[in-house]
Length: 305
Image 1 (cartoon, rainbow, N blue to C red):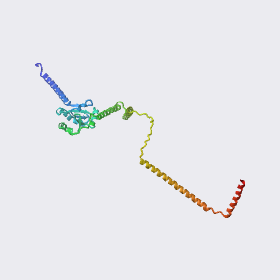
Image 2 (image 1 turned 90 degrees about the vertical axis):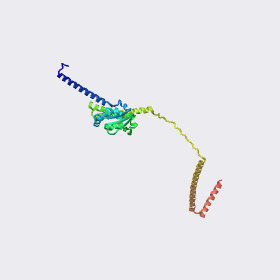
Image 3 (image 1 turned 90 degrees about the horizontal axis):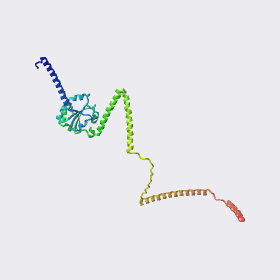
Image 4 (image 1 turned 60 degrees about the vertical axis):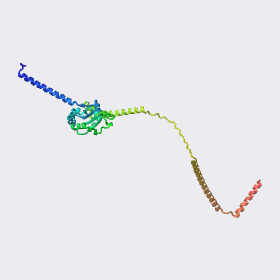
């Protein structure tokens, strides 16, 4: 130490100051990272963690101005999560399309409160004070939870998650066709239309085959149909009524025949009267001539005998 000059002491002092400043900066960064790590990143792979315990979950996107404005307060909420007895999570919508589909997220940022698998959408003010009051004062209890069929763990929302993932996959393919392969947008649309028609035909064929396997068609053959004549029992009163009706019908027929017969006889009588009136009585000469003619005829017949 005695051999060191004053200049060397100043030189070492400056170096030690720089080293301590760098160490302080690294320590501050570690503390900041530790505080920020209280906000857990939730994705499609680990989303089942939010089904247990109490959570505040935020859906966001890095390009969203409202999400950027909320980021500082959300990190402060994550630092206070242990004292509040909750867990704080972030969901990046662009990277977790399936999870966005499960929660039917259409606007950003969107905040949900989760308590043992019951989900409620947070619609109050987004300041740190209001969010803390929402948790501490249990204002979430006055909000109706999401119905069971819309719950993220339901079968319907699981299907919705797959649809959201499929939409993202189709968009990525569309971008690849346009940017990498240089196919125009209309060409990409035509390709997707052909694929859609082909998939529809294949799906229809599979459904027909499954239906034939489950409900096979019956062979068409002629069946001998037997006609069964059922004789109804007729009571005596009904029989008498039928006989009376038949008798009345026969009487009416007889009367009609009689009337027609009387009419015909009257017409014949009128005709005979007319003929009699038209003929004149024969004269005496004509009568005598007729008698004379008959006499020789009678003689001839007697001679011939």
